[in-house]
Image (cartoon, rainbow, N blue to C red; front, side, top):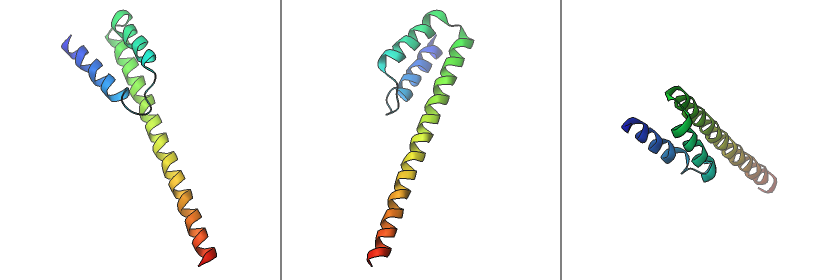
Length: 84
């Protein structure tokens, strides 16, 4: 039981505190489902899915930020070439 509590705490801490966290309502429903209707295999599957989705969202955000910064650098370089 202690392992389940620690897992839930780490899950909440990791995925509800970052900018890509889903709504509080979503996590309440998910946790209620995990605690009342799931066996250990179901819990494992849900947590793995949440980790995977969150990881993909984080990587996508990093790539978008890099793309934006690169486009800004290109614009700066073009501006410098035209005016200096």
